[in-house]
Length: 227
Image 1 (spheres, one colour):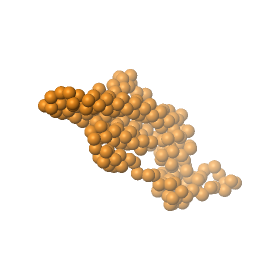
Image 2 (image 1 turned 120 degrees about the vertical axis):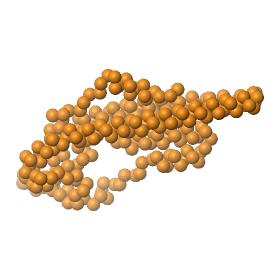
Image 3 (image 1 turned 90 degrees about the horizontal axis):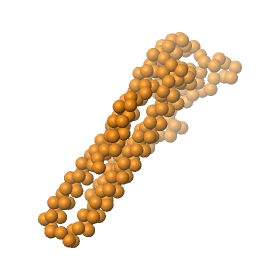
Image 4 (image 1 turned 180 degrees about the vertical axis):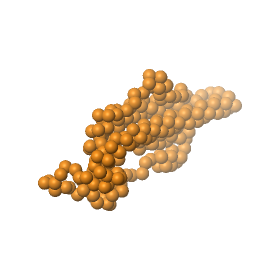
C-alpha cells in the first residue's frame, strides 16, 4: 500500500532536479526511490490445500495460519487507513505539482531577466532561487516521509490491537501458534483463520481510533508545506 508513496517522492525529486538542470540526477533519483517489483504470488513456494468438502469448516489444530497482508487490507481498520492514505497522498501530489509549476515559472522569468540586468544582480537572484528551490525540495521530501511513517504506525497499531483477538481465536481452536501463511510451504485451508479474524476484528475494534480534529488540521497544513 505504501509503494506508491515512494513513487510520489521519486517523481517530485525528479521534477525538482530537472528544474535545477540535471536530467541525469533526476533519472538516478527516480530509479533509486522506485519500489522493487513485487514477486508474483504464483512464484512463492507455498500452497494451501482445499479441505475435503465433507470435512469440518475448520480444524482444531496446534498451528494456525493467517494472511497478514489480507488481514489488514480487508479489515475495516485497513480500509479506513487506505482511504485516508489515498486522500492525503492526493493532496500531497497536487501540492507538489503546484510547487513544481511555480518553480518552473520562476526559473523561466529569471532566465528572461538574465539578458536585461547586471550580471552581479542576476547571480544574487539565481542564488536566492536555488536556495529556495532546495528548501522546498527538502520540505516536500519530508512530507512524503512523514506520511509514510504515519501509515506504518497505523498499520503497527492495528496489529497490536489485533493480538488479543488473535490469541482468543488461537485458544478457541486449541492452537499454540499462529503463523504468517507466507512462511508456510503447505497447509490446509481449514487452519487459516484470516476470514474469522477479520470478522471478529471488525466487530470489536472497527476501523480503529478516529483522528482528532487538531491532528487532521495539522496534517492538512503539513501537506501544503512550503510556498
